[in-house]
Image (cartoon, rainbow, N blue to C red):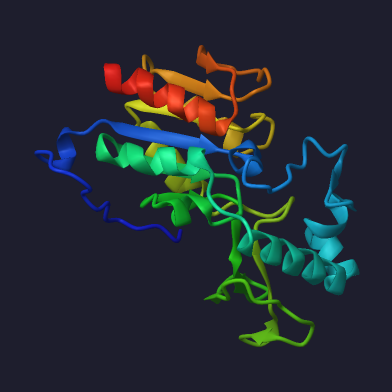
Length: 242
């Protein structure tokens, strides 16, 4: 939804059309090395909170202050984090590929690393919206307080909570269908609809999966059992040799 249709050229090559389209799906493991905690490694808690309390519409209705405080803290944490070598490695691949990133993450580390085309499936931590998500505002790393209005409703985090629709999935499906190479990084492939993107990869397209843990996949993949930074370093070596 908040993506750029223009991918800047970073070095000399003939035309963008001659570049292979590298489509990447990233999850929480992508940002773990930057100090952002992952839910699946925390025993069902996210920063000591149940996901039902801080990442569902029902939790928002029950206790909006708790939800606001939770995301305010996540925003402060994000301000102090920096992109890791995995993020910068993906950005550098734009020198040789037309890179499209679909991320399940709500942080802005892909953009801060220099990636030009990023689809956020689950929203963006540095944005706020009204109750209906019809009005969206960039708030940076600032807090949202009870009583802050956007439109005629209480301002809320621009996050796709569990149980809510994922409007950006259609754009992600379109990018996936057009992929010449597909890469999965740091996701368990258990959260839908993101995990379902693999069903839209064209037959014969190479798939690379980067994760330090074994991940079940419905597709045949080239598995790189490393974290994001080391995994993308290996991926670059593989791709640039071809």
